[in-house]
Image (cartoon, rainbow, N blue to C red; front, side, top):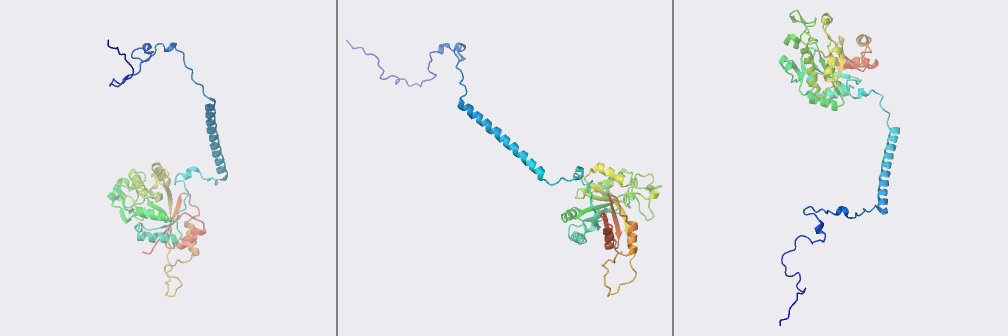
Length: 371
């Protein structure tokens, strides 16, 4: 009889070549709802209590909190001490009104200036001579005409009205560069505008002119005038200021802002009226000064100078009593905070000596040369 063989474990788990898949069967699988994985008896099972924070972890957290609080207190104390030190040791505060620091209109400016021809502002050789001359003579400003008494314009303007009037004459070839160079040389560029006295615009546009009957009014010297009440006039002046402000000019001397007495009645002219309108358009970014015209030109001594005289034609004569009397009559000591004397003279050194003796600081000297 054949002996019966029984299975053994020698070759257990070696016959199957397919990899095992799924998971091991747990004895509690029969208690899990199909497809949900939830234990319907979980609510009945005893819950494990969460471990309370350990003493070591509590001490570590407390330590970190204490460090953060201490750092905050140290930084706060440091800022407090620094503020206290700076307040005790800082420079004295300025006493000027805060508004005066925010705009140039309210600043008090001393205009100690020489007047030059616009043609000399070429940004090059002629300008260098102007700067050197002004510095050597002790001037702090240089004044030039944007619009002259005869109505001509002294810079290359791009305004359509100026082009239409053909008003540009003997103009600065490079005003922007000249203004920049003067500023770099510590010289304040000051622009003068003859506002209403004008022989060009009134004849080119009657709507902007002061008329007498059907023709343009002219004074005894043959000058015509722009109408202060005309919007064309105001926009003409405003356009010149706006254009040159963009070139770096911030101080403007407004001259001839009043009409002659014989025609002034009925017109709303004057420096205050004009600048009120301009400030409404430009704000306080620009300083406007009123010009007080003074003619201090005197006849030279007819006595001819010999070859051996102690002084030459370029040497100014000393200030004599008659000339001082003339200046005293024409140049009062007080002129107002927004006014500047525009003095035309053939004796600039003598005029400067008088102004210095009277402590007059706001003036422009235009040297009158022999024709």
